[in-house]
Image (cartoon, rainbow, N blue to C red; front, side, top):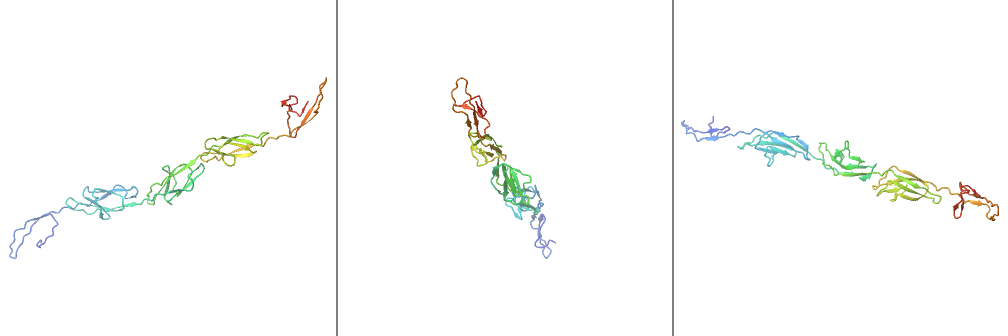
Length: 333
């Protein structure tokens, strides 16, 4: 049936043609035309070395063609320039296929598509502090993330269990950072660290008191501990650098010692300066003031002293030589 002027050829072989005229006479056969039909490569398959859904920050997947050579990778139907190796490292979302071309130039049907989904990475959060980040033990500061959800706080590089809210109340020294994780499970890079310093309190204070005397109406409070460079001291008023408080009126005072960080112990000492001891009135002495020299039997004279509030007396003869006789009593003979 191959009697037409044209013949469509799909099989390999050596093709000739003869021509027969109306009288039934045939020509010699034409020179042969050799047709070679090269085989079409098998349709390749793609395997992935890991999940095809991942996060953009540092994520990737390696796709591998089942054909060792002749590959051409495409993304969303468009050939990727230079992507001719057996493997392809993918970092972008899209539909990936591969075709294989033989050395004879025959191309396979495109492989089944492998769809890669690259989820975006959240923006790096920032931290704001609700107050000073250096404070005394017992204080705190509230740190706030710029992200309202998905937070995870860390201290010195280690995640803090349960610290997932937008705010974090901090009471301990350290370097605090926060990362944000999206609903797709992708985490941001860590924020710039906020360094919190919690300064120690001073030790509990102690003091000694030099009490008022009969001749001095005020006392002196001497702080005995803690002493040290940078410490300041208070007995209920302003702090001063000296641990000595002179000229303190009688009363009870609250002692505080503040260290070089400006921190002081919540424990205070109660210091009491007593009132000046009671001073009796000047004594009044009665007795003879003019005595004649004695001849024979000595003359005896008794003197009596009285003073309001007095409980004891010392009798002296100028220049302040204490007489033994009558010492401590209100009379002397």
